[in-house]
Image 1 (cartoon, rainbow, N blue to C red):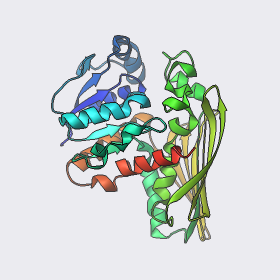
Image 2: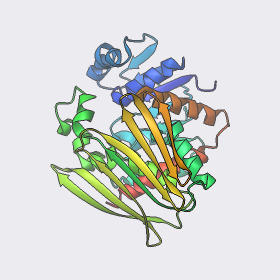
Image 3: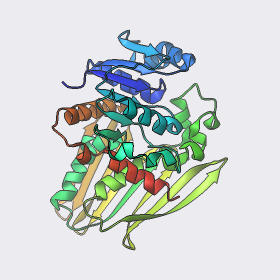
Image 4: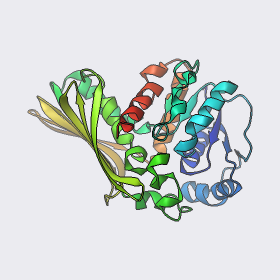
Length: 334
């Protein structure tokens, strides 16, 4: 296995997920966070409550570690993503860089730096729903022509912000972090941009030309509770993405319509699984993919290992930098 040593920026929720996934794969992992309270919370509260007990093989540090790493993960709030990424690229000590979604906050001028486009190492963006076996099963069926001519894809990522706050108990309210600030990469459009990433990934092979988006956003207290993207190509309506911070219970689903039938993907919670339903003139097929949230991060690390081993070209990855940048450009149209 090529992936043996990982550095993670950020001791928050994503940092804990990746640290646990690293240890499950017996990967050495170091977590960097300048906030001593965040590191203490990770060790004594957050990690044990999620995974049963603390793993002493996880290294915690307030100071950056300037050493060779196979992978560096940036799991900080979005406003720090680009600055840290550029610093890592300039230092040149990591073999691969993973930036958690969303790529950055709105109108980030640092993203114009050529270091990103001309990087000699893979840069990936953490839209890990696009790596799930269920979504790739869906895409294989689209490519195979089983639905006939695909003409419409619709995606919903709806989850009340209180669910997110419950997973981050150290936050007193939505305004305690970037989540409640659109200008810092929060709000439903940026935080739930898994929806846009999924739409773009599933539709990339059949859309004709550049994608444009009309968005309708309801804003409250400086962030958007609901964002609706009507997506078109060369003036032709081809899809819709809805992302919100209001829905209870959460709803994550995708529907693909073709001339010979339709498919539906749903992410369900009881039990935790992803379900793909295919319906056409021959009948109905239902396929279940059992999972836990931690599975997403283990799959992501395995995928990155395959990239480092040369089994997958970085640009062809469902979480490539170019795909993440495409999501970011649509977000910046709002």
